Amino acid sequence: MASSVVTFAVALGLTGCASIKGTLVPVPDTVPGASKVDMLVATTRLRATDPQEFYSGGRGPELSFAEFTVSIPPAANRKEGEVQWPQSVPGNPATDFVTLKADVIDRKQATAWFHRTVRSVPQRRVLVFIHGFNNRFDDAVFRFAQIVHDAGTPVVPVLFTWPSRGSVLAYGYDRESNTYSRNALESTLRTLASDPAVGEISILAHSMGNWVTLEALRQMAIRDGRVAPKIRNVLLAAPDVDVDLFREAVLDMGQSRPSFTLFVSQDDRALAISQRIWGDAVRLGAIDPEQEPYRSELDKSGITVLNLSKLRTGDPLNHSKFAESPEVVRIIGRELAEGQTLTDSRVGVGDRIIQVTAGAAAAVGTAAGLAVSAPVAVIDPRTRENFQEHVEGLGQTVSGALTP
Image (cartoon, rainbow, N blue to C red):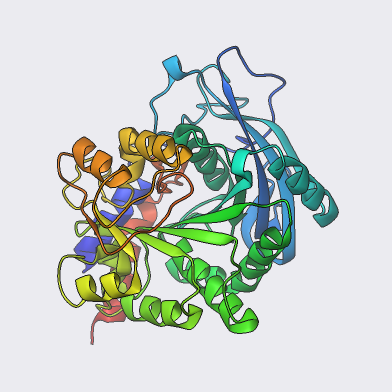
């Protein structure tokens, strides 16, 4: 166990250089050929003491809001599926992700921004993204901008970011901060859905972010009798969630729940470590959807699964495969913009993905309509702190905790 945790920590924290401060401080202008992504941020994070950081990993007393405009380098200077982090600040918009606008705003200003923006988007689609474990604030902002840009589907991007410490040593803190944020996420989703200008809402969650997503939707269903009808689609990427808890959450949402799509991989090393930490409780993102009882349960529940176990990427943990497969992001974004869906008969997007990944993806279950985009990688080695001095202690701590 200690050896596995050391490998996990090394892969997450030591494969890139340490992060730098001030990556979100706006630059004066962008360059020809660069793209822009405007997003609304809703967060339960505490304001950072350093104004260059905007928000910390601490827990804020109430929901806070911000507006960011991210500049993405011209296509010739970047690889799709990746975030090009500045080597120094200020970044260079010709080669780096940089911000052009970064304003902390109040609720009234946030509501006005959203209401104004959603009216300008075709089909008035909204995409809410919830990141996973070990993410700093700048991680979440830049990664979400990358997804929205590379998918190529017009949406109103809303980032919900909860208080993650951005450290591989803070798994327990992150998990509790995740749960701490469920009421705020529920409130955010209810507010978005109540706007008469909104056409439909899709939710994209990754890793630990799936837990707070399911909790918020479950609470909404219990309070209101159902999940808000405008929340049509929920995409759960590599969900670090107990299978039994997922089953109960879906049941609590009732028959009028959103369409769910799971992205799973049986070779996800991050989820394998999580399973050990949680006493060998099976993680939803690592199930084999072709095996029973999962196949029958998913089919009965009308849940679609994409199994990416055979998809090979450069991700050492196999926890963020879609980020290493820009072809899949492009296909999903393009097809969804044209109104395609994943279906029982494995046509449309499903077949296109199977072709691109050489048979790696398999859709099971019944149809799940999607509105936008693809899963996200939140493990970005360029944004990790250097944990060399902690690796041995991490292995000893976890090993000792699990040894009788």
